Length: 428
Ligand SMILES: *Cc1c(COP(=O)(O)O)cnc(C)c1O
Image 1 (cartoon, protein in one colour):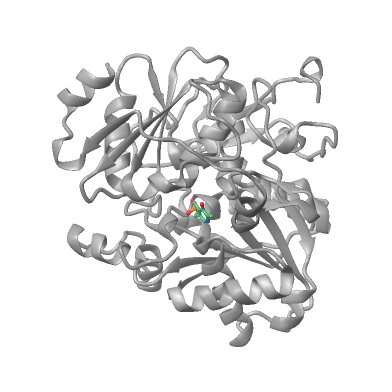
Image 2 (image 1 turned 60 degrees about the vertical axis):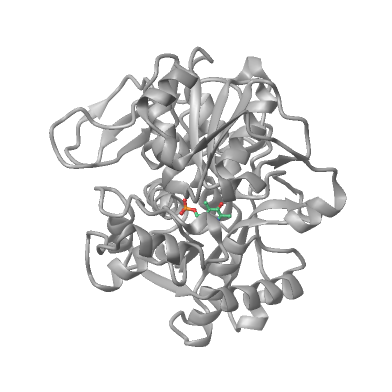
């Protein structure tokens, strides 16, 4: 869509905890009422979605995204009906929604994961660039925001732990508006979140908000919108690898909107969410029937995280118990949680590349492994419609076909040296 044709989306926000409605959205992240943690949810004026074919990237689903301004993006996932993997698994109605780089299928998401779908609506939801956006990330989110902020010259400060640094690449030059802070000294994703929280409180900065941000969730939900508007119906089953579970919540929210739309059937899309053994806090809690995560000491969590191959699935504080979070999404859809080993994921990645013809990121391989298990154990019937969210892929192909630039940290902080004062001195 040309800028002159752009119109902001009409929507309201509603609290999942108390039902309170907010008609003026000023990057609101939570309800002001005195109750336990609860998500806000966007309620769009248009109840039936129109796909705007001429719009930029994912903005073609703009009816159900909280947009206020035009953002350059290519964050459009591609949905198609599988033949190769489907016949290998004995499933007759398997659909794949792919976020990544796959020129043959016209997928051109250069950061190679569905995190690229979070950045455009989050950035569009701000009316201007008056504050610096702060993003904490295990790597993929930071890369996605860096790419989209670079393309639009939007100020961004990213906080990444050591293992996330190798994720800071692009096929294009980074803009000067993009700054990177590294947290070192055996730091993990949670340390990056802590530091970003300290910076975001300072004058002139604004936190992205993570799972609480409706723009982020509805951006991830575009995977389901793309699949359903292509296939014509809501799938019976949805498979995705989760670390925070935000994508799972988003898929649930998108499927509910599509049910309310009325044209895509009334199926309750069952969530099959997958974690990487041995770091499986949500799978463990769900299988214990618990709304709270089970206690695990920090050293044990760090030890387990160090053993998983899909590093992006290492969130220690996922929005599981919060009202409108992962627990509610699973409960409402009669969902399942899985735990898959590195070896199972690696095998699934190999099968996927053989049968579909594109490489998977480790997290997407974890999801493919769970689908393989569910098909083999016949816990899904062969004719049920299944949607596999390939949350990331094509990186091997991208690296073979393009020159890659890496971003080096502008500031480095040791985990054990971090304090409010120090952060204020450096960034205030
Ligand atoms: C972040 C990420 C996930 C997990 O997403 P959730 O936020 O937990 O839903 C899965 N796959 C890839 C490639 C990711 O980057």
